[in-house]
Length: 371
Image (cartoon, rainbow, N blue to C red; front, top):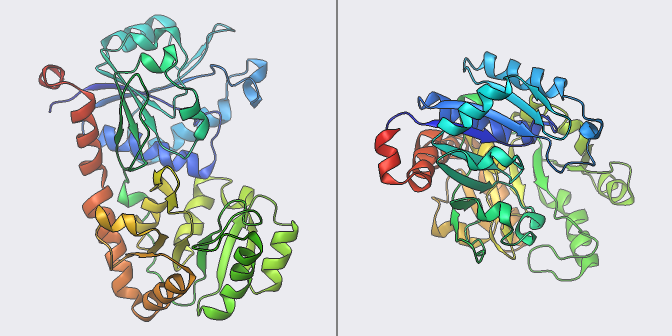
């Protein structure tokens, strides 16, 4: 397809944290490098609980995202709108209306666009990029019904009565994640299941048993495990630290894009107990970035094998013993496994593969011809 005019909407200016910045950058940089005309639009909308509640333009987020895009050598206008206060930053209102009216596609990342003018582009697509049950719980609202298609990073997304969710995968711009080769002395990042005290780990159902398994993990692994917790001073954090874990505060790990990137390339690999969810297999932008950084990913759930190349760089497990075996396998052959991780990212998650496929589904053939 030719060049399209695309308005991308998200919430990164309000939430310029590392993981959120990283997820949006993959779309913005990827679409621009493919040659499309891209505008980033953020609408204050219904986010009354955030720091912008006082009708203040999020200048810090605008400056941060703008600087990152310039350093990546992409030119993308950034527009902030607070319709209630009549605030528009980055573009005068007449320009914005014209840009929306002439756009081939509004790509609404996360479902954050509430502007009345969101209906002006020729097509509208909603992308569910993170496990947010509240987005699904909204149901077929009038706002969601205004979208022409719906994409989700879940492999088996639920259907809305108004439309069917189409599976997609997170795109990556590999150069953002290049770094030193993985080394055996680096720690292993572990994504601890949320609600460990209440839920199971692997096949375990009892919360106490799940915690016991986590506490026993360091003694069974060669690389020292580390994890990030919302409260690094909690009772769980103290128990993990006492068992040999390294525990870090989530706020510090995700404070900026550089901090987010540092924890990726500063790890030997990632052991994810959150790879499989009740509502379908979930593969996040975080997981894809780990692979692009040349860090092997070991994920729960065998369903990944149905649609991803596993065995080198990406491994799966079904229980704790399987997870330990996979970690040791990676440690014994780290250079080959690291190269395999980057190969999976290049072959499957590269923006040149993911984004054209998404646009082909979002834009009907006659608009593709015009674009």
